[in-house]
Image (cartoon, rainbow, N blue to C red; front, side, top):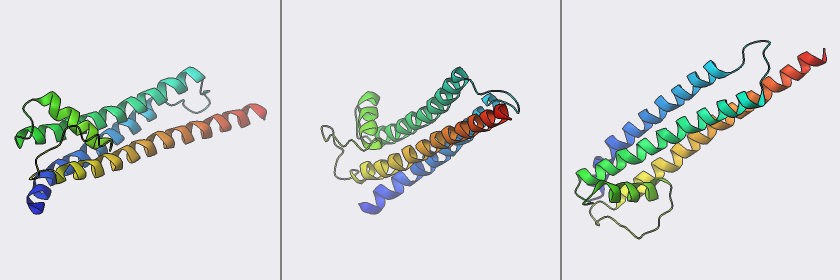
Length: 149
């Protein structure tokens, strides 16, 4: 039973990792396109737009991963409708673990696998956003130093 659940969840896990990598790549390209070029100032409005774009991209990537897990749960016949499957997936992915909706014992381990996937992917998303903030602070400090000269 354990092996069956792991084998069923592994392809979804691999897809989620690839999807997260795609969204990290998109966030980096977005950052590069929107960041100020040499000599330009980083305005507060540009900072807000840039960080909002990065956050929304990472959040969208996480939502899509929840949808992939929900699709797997439906495919396995665990839920009668997609909204219930998506709700359960979101509870697992975010590690809330309400317990109000549970899967059958046969597939229950998939919830833990999805939770491990979710906590890892939220960590990656946080790292991307933190890196963007650090880079923006660095650009702002450089701009202030250039102004002081």
